[in-house]
Image 1 (cartoon, rainbow, N blue to C red):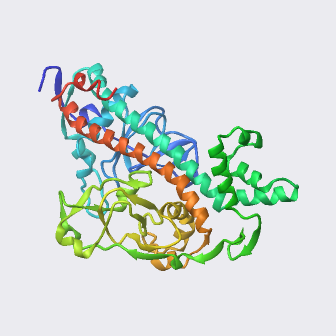
Image 2 (cartoon, one colour; image 1 turned 180 degrees about the vertical axis):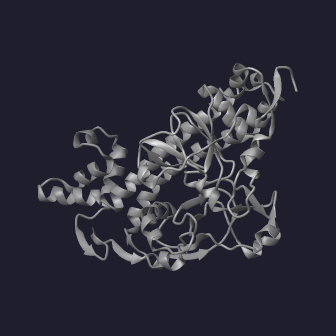
Image 3 (cartoon, rainbow, N blue to C red; image 1 turned 120 degrees about the horizontal axis):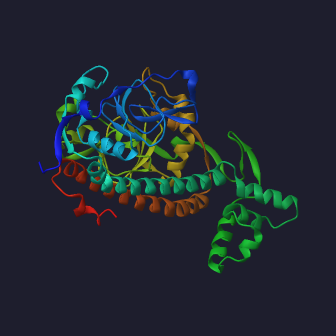
Length: 434
């Protein structure tokens, strides 16, 4: 080890403090974040720590490390570490993330991290705060870029969800036409304003091609609402069970699964892979299975739409790799009328409703019959195709951001052990992460 580093232990440098349970009555929907082993799960009016903190999963998501840059509450399912400066808290965050704490489970029934065992881990760190802070600066910059990409994607997905809600839940273009007819105004122009969010004066300033495209979109919506099983819906749109349009099947699991796991092989999609990333896309898995397991599972191609049916049910994802899905997933080998993009946003809209119909003693399970018998609104094919075109462009932009974030994440994970071991210099990576 190069000069300027010293040996110590986790307990000596960054002792873990036990979190404290928060009462149900003290939990809020907004306010000061409350961290558990898997990150923020609720909010409170008060804080357990009045400054930044590094949080470490104790029960449940063992060894998972989080950083709060503001005051927060840490529940009894986690430990926390306090340092004087936020900059050094970042160093502790990256240091603990590199130690493999997630592999220190000491309880087979309920995963748990033993504090004494973690405290005994030997570490080598720079002997000055300045060096420690400089060491993790490239990692901080990478995470900041990833965070910015995530914020951009949240905005893009909000836009796409707003379009879905406007067209297929609130029926804004249809209602605009109805109101315009009652007022003796141009219904097509009113629908164009509703779709674009522009005023009539702003529409006049649009390029000719854009105006024509918007006009064609507005023409696809009727000017009347009629009663249906789902309440008032646009005339010409139907209310039909989803099973009439989709073949719904479950994935499969070779058992015992441990006999088919391998360090490399065929990607094995777990629910945790889906919940780890808030984006619509799943790019990689943590686990793999061997070829012999293929005949007992379902191997899907890149681009497939899948839906969780247990643990965290009703969550849709697009596969961005060829992968195997277990029986905690649903997939759709045959479909008609609906596009995958439309189904993705439909499933998001239906999620609360579907979960309420699920069953299970520990985890809610979403049976195929529940989804098959769900009555849904069926717009015309032309409207779905127009939605698919508009939202498809948004999803492609999101995918580009996700790919960049994935590459940045891989670079960060490659740099992390090298920087924290002192094997490479920070100077060699300044340009790469600037």
